[in-house]
Structure formats: structure tokens, C-alpha cells
Image (tube, rainbow, N blue to C red; front, side, top):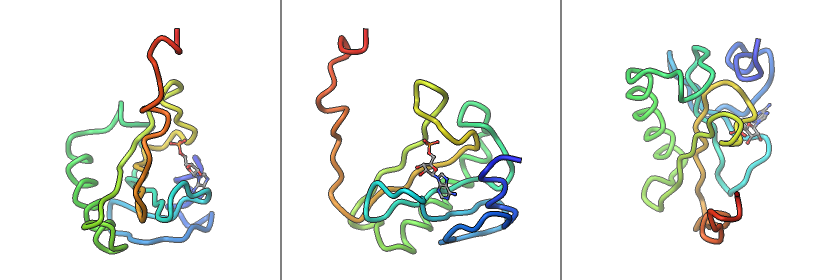
Length: 118
Ligand code: AMP
């Protein structure tokens, strides 16, 4: 069973922010912003590559609800999902990073020159 499935099953502790029948939101153990929450579908799916439009519809509303609950909906926030090796995905259970609570930088992307990767 994967790490996030264990969190869904409450076999591993996490600080849960919001939960419903299909989705779970918990605080990232290694936050990269004052607010850093992960939203996941409870049903295991490896990544965005394998998810369905139905799951995406549900998690969209769920993420909006989380943002309201932690009061970052008006100030703004960022939603990221990493996919596969080049995307930097470490945990192979679809998750959306919800980052906020401060003006976020765009560091790597603002400086990067595509030629640097060749
Ligand atoms: P990614 O690199 O997109 O796969 O992101 C995985 C995220 O999961 C990272 O930001 C980790 O800090 C986070 N993470 C790993 N283990 C845990 C855990 N036990 N509880 C909460 N977050 C975790």
C-alpha cells in the first residue's frame, strides 16, 4: 500500500484539514509555504496521467473548499501537481499541492532558460 493510501486508512498520522467521502486534505510534512496542504483522492490513482474527468471535477470543488477553510481563497494561492520523473513526483498517488499564505515566488521558472536543460 502506498504512503498516501496509508494516510487515507489512518495507518499513518497526518494533520487533516478537510475530508469527505472521496477526498482528503492534509498538511505537507515539509511545507514550502506558510500554507502547504496536499489534496488527494481517497481512491488510489498513480498520477494526473491516470485520473478521470470525474475525479478532477470533484477535486476542483474540494480544493476550492480547502482554500476557503484555511482563508487563502481571497489572498491567492497556487495549485500544483507533479507528474512522473521529469515532473518531480516523489509519491506515486495523485496529489495537488495547495500553496499560499504569502506572495509566492516563481523562482526556478523565472530564471530558467530552456537551453540550460539540453
Ligand atoms: P511530490 O514531490 O509532488 O510527489 O510531493 C510529495 C509531497 O509529499 C512532498 O511535498 C512531501 O513533503 C510530502 N510528504 C511526504 N510524506 C508525507 C507525510 N507522511 N505526510 C505529509 N506529507 C508528506
